Image (cartoon, rainbow, N blue to C red):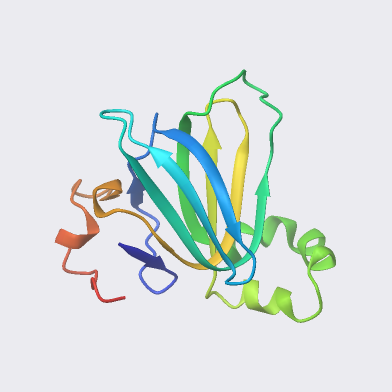
Length: 152
């Protein structure tokens, strides 16, 4: 299921808790990154694919101890997520790119690992398997929700 700013809802939930984070690959030329994860239930691998990536950050502090399991995944508007660090982010951003982030068309993806480490990605859209996206209101995947259009 493709996730972008036009279909983003604050009540969306992502069923990735306890899945293993296997790694991240960055394709600088195509401005893509792929996070590879593994389902805790059966060990099958899947990918979170991010397109038109502007920024990737990954901490490796292991603040809460060593673990590559996912604690939480959130996807919000980059404009909302960066409101608190507006000046700092603006200073770090190359000329003209900050307006891309704040125009509401970019996503802020945050993956928190059980170790306390955090992976943040700013991208225009992301693709995640349908069974990993749930609507908080009824527990259905977005594919079953009439408010979402599979073709996006």
